[in-house]
Length: 537
Image 1 (cartoon, helix red, strand yellow):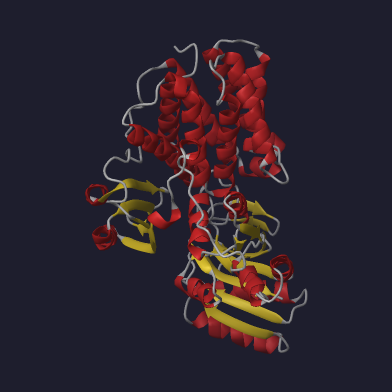
Image 2 (spheres, helix red, strand yellow):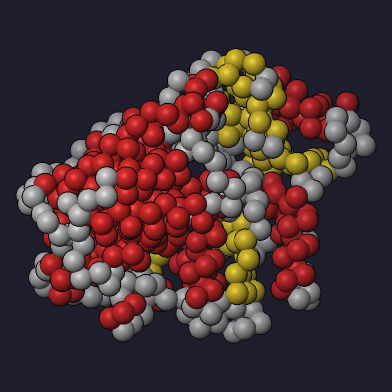
């Protein structure tokens, strides 16, 4: 057992934490308390730690050797930095801030014993709370606060004893989350993000009590080879029941390979390849299943060599100070085309901070507005904005919660106005647009509209379930009536990928008959998960 923390233990912690999250990924995804199809906390945490692991592996590849004991501060900083850039969703962002708080506290500490670890966990808790505009107890925040309190309570310099006290207190706090958050109690589950943090703290104990590396293979191999040889990032989602030889094929084509699954036949595929490898990488996905949301991004323009103190920090390219751009998060060919027609750069659903930062870079603009279109992506957008601003780009986040709000915001964009005034106008337009959606319930749940069962169709208004039914046309009509009953002159309908062809005609006829003074705009969005999106202005 270790008396002081060293860089090798940091590496074991990251690898072990990632292995634990991968093993429990589906379980954590299933802890989603809401019936809507967005329960991907486990997947987000896996991808966040994957990026942290990659940052450590890249450091090893660059130096040609494993980081040694005096470099524990550097290892922690790289782990935290990688987690930040790869952070996805609220839980991923909060965990990245927990790691940052620990790294900031321990980076310059010569010897990390129990007392130092307790102070680092207190710093981690403070960083996590600071990252959230309106902290809610019964979440991962309560779990990290309890870990810090438990670590400090024993007042010991024994590193392992403090780590065990933190992990134990976190586990007890996780069990209490249903008592703090009624929605968890109604669903009979604990907080998903808190469950992930407990796994990470357990992995820290394991890393300090064993000098053996985690048995599982790292998700992202160390990046050896010639810099710039694999100059393109290929990413896509893959619907497949079995992967066959996909991993082996992609491993031969390039490096930085990540293939992670959500447990329901959906896989997230990421690999760096040469220009000649782009086509074969996509074809390998076709051979395994149905790839979609395919993106190919050149790697070189987004990164520039930096002094050692800032190694690994993506760079936002110099941009003319007066130029502007908009970056929008969306899924579906139709929605993507709509936003691109408005001059926006589109990033796929559930992006990481790195992906949003790369989009800001690609815009080449000096002033950029971000439209996250999802409450769970708002923290990611805010993190990307902070990173870009540090590199000299002016960035504002308009907190859109649905693509229909982003369409309303982009409709009033005016480059002749000062940027700040334009952002205010866009935010006002988005806020004036009420949003609704129709989706299929993923689990039994108790909603404000009553109980629903998995497979029911749900009509949501501003994120709350208002309509429950079995027929898509009926639920869609009732949702429209509920929203238009509160007033509105313009209704925007965006049909999902699996919406029947007759749905648009049915809803057009209904609005014309029942709401004759309402202007109606219909689009084929092609978005997954949501059969219909509705905006009312």
